[in-house]
Length: 626
Ligand SMILES: Cc1cc2nc3c(=O)[nH]c(=O)nc-3n(C[C@H](O)[C@H](O)[C@H](O)COP(=O)(O)OP(=O)(O)OC[C@H]3O[C@@H](n4cnc5c(N)ncnc54)[C@H](O)[C@@H]3O)c2cc1C
Ligand SMILES: *[C@@H]1O[C@H](CO)[C@@H](O)[C@H](O)[C@H]1NC(C)=O
Ligand SMILES: *[C@@H]1O[C@H](CO)[C@@H](O)[C@H](O)[C@H]1NC(C)=O
Ligand SMILES: *[C@@H]1O[C@H](CO)[C@@H](O)[C@H](O)[C@H]1NC(C)=O
Ligand SMILES: *[C@@H]1O[C@H](CO)[C@@H](O)[C@H](O)[C@H]1NC(C)=O
Ligand SMILES: *[C@@H]1O[C@H](CO)[C@@H](O)[C@H](O)[C@H]1NC(C)=O
Ligand SMILES: *[C@@H]1O[C@H](CO)[C@@H](O)[C@H](O)[C@H]1NC(C)=O
Ligand SMILES: *[C@@H]1O[C@H](CO)[C@@H](O)[C@H](O)[C@H]1NC(C)=O
Picture 1 (cartoon, rainbow, N blue to C red):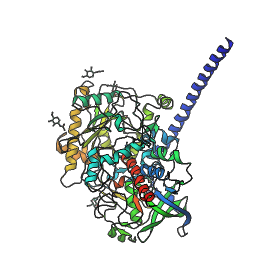
Picture 2: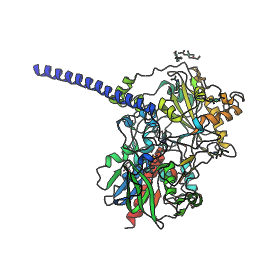
Picture 3: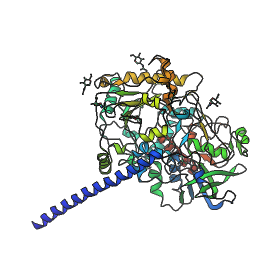
Picture 4: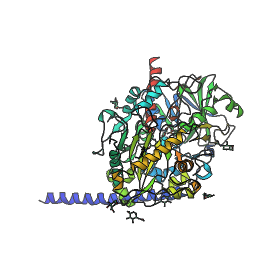
């Protein structure tokens, strides 16, 4: 009797202690969050990389020893490669990463758009001033957020896990890249994946998922009411609710995202942290690679800066450049690999004349301003409630990067191939434009007031993303100095035939049609976009209005690709189908820059696939030749 009494008392005490502990943990996280948030409000981006500057410019680089493989950039792709290459105990692998390891705050999934995007974890790039697009941003410069740190851009992205359409990879193959067809790449998507069904109501095509890889995938729960309306309206329009990562892509689904029990699964956390005890793997953070040094056509050294000291590391087998779609072409050019004319103008000695380096820059588009009001109101949970749910269950709005939980893929009349999507809609409720996001984007005030949400609990917006674009931009060097930021000209909506605007217009019409379906009528959904002052010469809602508005409200979708394009020859391409740089013996590029044609999806999972496949190709080359 006494014993059982004691037991009950003991359990009660433990529960009390746990409750007190949770409440103190909520305090800790609330504090962490509020402090970081305050700091982010005053944060200003650097305008160059001079924070990495060497203390002495003349000192000879300090010898850092020799490594079999030097991976430059520990981002989405680089982390996968380093993890897989270091599985071979005989291979010494070095990762050189410019940024830091993610801190506790970064691991809070929702911190990215609210805080991290305005911190040292973002390089803080902006485009060169644009003449015809990005006119809604200060200085007419498109924002170009890029992650800096172990995990790269997956430290600040929305973690949306979508793999693209099988026709994307068929096209890659047809362009002269054997081994990159859908059947070839699917096993590499699966190899990474650790799928967790967290929303029992969401359709999942189990055949297309693996449950034992290193990268967690979950579905955000609970699903917000507005998102249910979006999915219902899709059905009313004849689209299936399906796993868009499964057999067929066209249709809509509740998101699959890269979180582990609600925490951010960036690539460093998923792929590198678990293997850091390998003695053959060395990860150098806060280290800026400044040059790849060649002996003839062979990479022999990489130079980098760490805490003001300049180092050189010897390369025994290969250099793998995974610095992303902006920095990979920059570092190639700084090292003498790129368009000869451009390099000579800047006084850089040409190692290999590759005119395609930095060219073919392309991206998806994002149409802003498709905002609506409704009479369905969902209360915004108080901060402490969100924190508690996040800590205890790993769910709720702290477990999501943005209040976006559903996506759809569609084929408009402009896409001829059956089953191939050329339009994505992602649905977002509450105000997606957080302070940090608007400080990063720098919307001009008279534009943002036309396209903002008016009621935080009942408004919603739909981001329309045209997927197949024709406009090409470029990355060039500002100077031969590795501490200068490169010049980026996204040049969106610039194609001569105006096809990219046609799909933007089609996308807007599609969204207007979707929001007139019964499900949206039931919540009295109304378009709340205010006519842009800048377009007051055009009649509101006409095609000419949207042609004008597009210059202000269409941005790229943060998915730049093709600046080190993969293809069959060195004329329009930089790497071959094994990711080897043309004209160089032992240098590969592996990141979003090799993507020859953007996929009908977001591209982070594609980067993981490139990392997995790249590592396998390297293993095949070096292990079979021994
Ligand atoms: C705001 C935003 C939201 C996004 N949302 C999604 C999403 O929800 N889903 C999705 O699939 N995709 C999303 N993306 C896109 C996706 O995250 C990126 O395309 C992807 O992370 C790119 O991977 P990467 O390996 O090419 O480059 P990165 O991940 O950018 O890695 C490059 C790494 O190299 C390092 N580096 C660069 N230069 C040097 C140097 N000189 N020396 C040393 N290190 C260097 C960088 O610091 C970085 O860590 C988003 C992107 C952004 C910006
Ligand atoms: C914009 O126009 C100016 C003036 O014609 C030109 O100098 C500049 O290069 C153009 N910018 C871009 C990004 O095309
Ligand atoms: C699942 O992942 C594990 C670990 O990466 C891998 O060994 C296995 O082959 C994968 N399964 C499939 C079906 O790809
Ligand atoms: C927001 O919309 C809801 C639902 O229509 C309404 O109840 C509420 O009063 C609105 N709030 C404001 C600030 O307009
Ligand atoms: C939405 O964000 C914009 C830009 O930050 C802001 O001006 C507006 O007041 C916000 N709307 C609501 C309802 O919070
Ligand atoms: C939108 O609906 C109208 C009227 O039903 C139709 O003519 C048009 O083709 C639709 N457009 C799109 C892009 O769905
Ligand atoms: C919302 O509007 C619809 C359509 O007008 C109406 O049928 C419904 O009752 C309204 N709901 C609320 C909660 O006001
Ligand atoms: C928009 O705002 C800017 C300054 O904020 C101003 O220079 C410009 O004239 C405005 N445009 C219109 C059409 O009002």
